[in-house]
Length: 446
Image 1 (cartoon, rainbow, N blue to C red):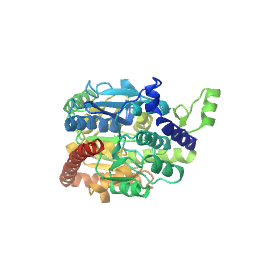
Image 2: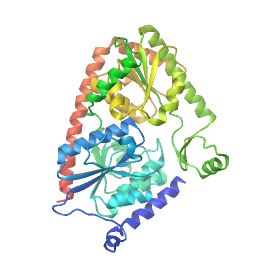
Image 3: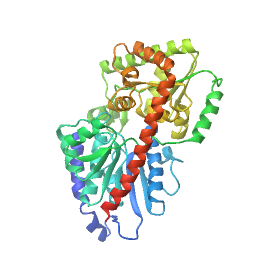
Image 4: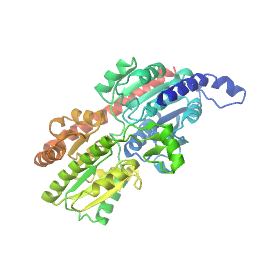
């Protein structure tokens, strides 16, 4: 069924070429830039799903674009799955464009009415979470190409693609310029025959003084005495990805009324007995390490659900803990509050890439338990992989994390200094990306 989506997208991309003449007949809306007009920029991403990392990326990017281009020169529109879930995230002059997982026509309308598209989701062309997500970005890039408008992917991850998805990406993204996050992504990009260079993630300079003030007060209200070490844990369910479309599971759900592991509409999480056992092993092993650390250091455990979808993982993990804890997840707390919580921690154990990135502003030592190349990349770049990088399927995961936590305690000062240097490097890269974007835009419209 994913492949069927690709055929639909190819048809819509072809159809988008007729948007301009059809608009002259009053049958659709189409816009193209001309001298004296504000530049209308569409930010196509995974916003509105209460994913802290995805939201932090775009909130930071909007600020970067406004600073680089001037609010008087551009109109920015952010695509969102739910307007309410991003309320208060953006300045009032930034527009929002609501879409759903059945994105075909909404994305066609959005791209046709803007002059530039920025693909602003980190997992731009990967299969980790869902092939449909990559198809979405291919459609956006393909429409802009068909309509002769510029498109750029900003701080992107490019995975190893093959088969029909690799061909779709090559065909529709040929005119898109990619600023990728890692050398590995650049290698995969070149394999697809696409162009770009290495930059970084847009969330590095994300600041939230208000969120940090809220976090300190909230933690104390929830039982922290202001002195005990705060041990943060960001868990996920690494084994229910990728999300795949299934007409059979959808039909079964309609007939029985039980939509088990449904993500949305026809899309369902992956499931099997083996996956469930692996997930339980992952939770149990991390909990084992956290319980040891908590006993030895009298720590207060902060469980962080970085995406609304992490709620069940957080609840199941909490049941395995033996000491005091508090759960905070993005279902109830916005991007500023979740980032504020990360920056209060004494130590972090994370399976979420952006939990690591957003905590580095305060140089907080962390231990990564990775499910894919994103966390691997950032830990290797920070030169912490030898002692602080593990993987969700490691057989001796609990003992490995325990060893890392002990080392981190002994080498806290050195780790924090390493993180500060890494933070500064990436903040400079973000500035360089803004400068490149401005020059790239001038070339597109010269």
